[in-house]
Image (cartoon, rainbow, N blue to C red; front, side, top):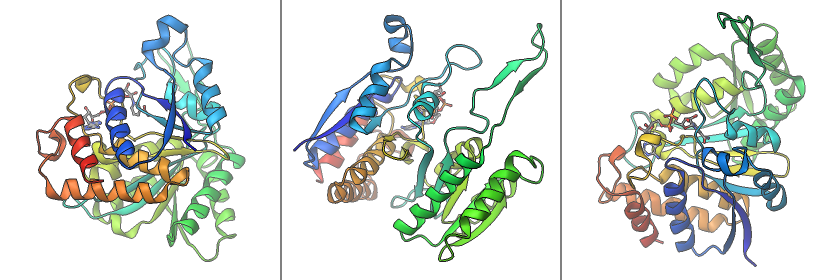
Length: 332
Ligand code: NAD
């Protein structure tokens, strides 16, 4: 029977990288029926909201979605649709693997960032403090409950994936209440997993260590903003945003999206690298039990990149998005 998956193409480069990903998944022979729903600025005018109810309803029904990036206006306008999807569906853990593809990247790394996805500085509680907008404040909300579930997720993930160490990243030396609570909770959860090594790092030191010695790290668990920033740093280590996949997990639902955004300046040019979205597709396939197809696609991507005949601009080639995807598909 066909799998039923919600498909959110997104905007900017989203529809192009999603189309490329469908090409590759089809070639792997997985039978998927996609329920396509639209979110973002494009539907704002028609539906009066960038996140129509049917998007959330579809993911609630299918329990799994493949999503392209969605633009968020800077400074003013609607709040992030991406953050709203994670919060509404309680997708509390954002998993972002960092692993080199053959010959790519400035450092060798094989680590995974698990980012708390529902609170911290992304809670959306912020305002101007005076009428002339000369002072503003944002609330960083950290709860024991959300910290506990994301750290536990990181340990369970480490066990499942055969990983050996979890590093909690924080700024508890300065943000003593919020980040102190996150760290204290992480230490408590760690005591339930004596078979996994546990350590913690202050975020600024961690940023430097990741650039110099990424091989020291295995699974990183951290708060929302730090996870966002460090996972982009990690993407930079292994070849950039064009090759960095991701997935958001809740208790019974998951939405898979790459780390990168909608890259508006490249939209509609059939130019960007769809590898991040394709590898995001492999995370989705594993999640729905199509492990063999996921591994086959991963290998096809590795081969295509190793051969280097059809690479997109970011990896030094001049192949188009769809051309590269068809080349990957031809290896399946
Ligand atoms: P971005 O990730 O869209 O792009 C930054 C740069 O990275 C691009 O200019 C490009 O040089 C490179 N890049 C990104 N994806 C690439 C790909 N697939 N192939 C090759 N190069 C690629 O980040 P941004 O410019 O900061 O954000 C653009 C918009 O995307 C903003 O509105 C932002 O809010 C949104 N965004 C959405 C998501 C999401 O949907 N989850 C995530 C991050 C940013």
